[in-house]
Length: 367
Image (cartoon, rainbow, N blue to C red; front, side):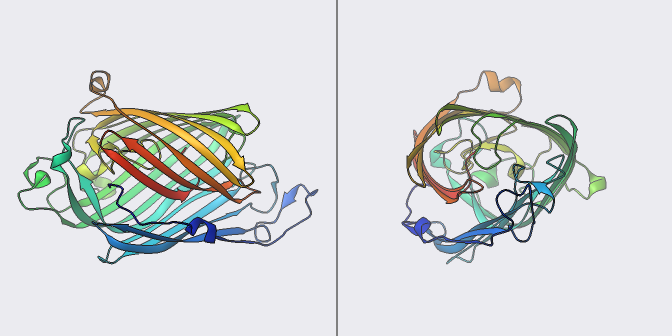
């Protein structure tokens, strides 16, 4: 998405914050209801493809009864947007922690009636091939993990997307391609295994430690999937406190999907996390390898800033990642802390690539 926005402006200053005080600070446990905190704000944006869009986003945090004060807070987010072209996005990710983080449940519920970019397949897909396709789909993500060794958890996950009402340009790039899934969408139903190693000191605003998550999923007919394929991903993050609240954060991500993967489930550069600066889904293929580095620093009071850069590529298979051309991006952003207790911040980033810039506005850090 090119930066042709009239968006957000000072809306992040219009947030409202509600907090119901619970037990006294010197107590070691918290009640999940009394300590529920809600942060919410309006959203306004404009894109040529969507017209005027408006909605809201928010995040609620809490701890289950009996959980220690220093444990990770559980969270539920909700974002709803509607555009003048009748597009709808409902996005509700969640992370639940209990038994002093020995158990974790995370995932997403959502419904999307929206457009997505398509440039073709591969790292050399040309900008002039840009087109969009529209598709509707509900989404379910659910993973549960249990700690078996200190800081090491294993578990299982399930993913479901049901794509329908797929529309794209007749005789366009997508129509002329031979990608899986263009014949009307279909159902993706994945079951998989996950492993996590987590030594972060904080879930929302980590200042030190590692987070490593590996996942392997398989879509099969017996699960109701219209496609049969496997996928693997490895997401590695590292945080180091340089001095005071000056933090260096790094992210290494590699992923691969097998033959038979529909085009809407391929890996891609162009997200609001790992590859800020590229247009949405700019480079698309079976395999992805990307690096990102971010410097986070305080400005004044609740305000902070970041500077970031990234490099990544996509290819048809793992071996191609080491010979493929890499694409670079960089940028800067502003942070505003809306929940000082749990460290939740509004994130406004502007990223640049060789093809232009993009603006990002959301809650929580990029990684």
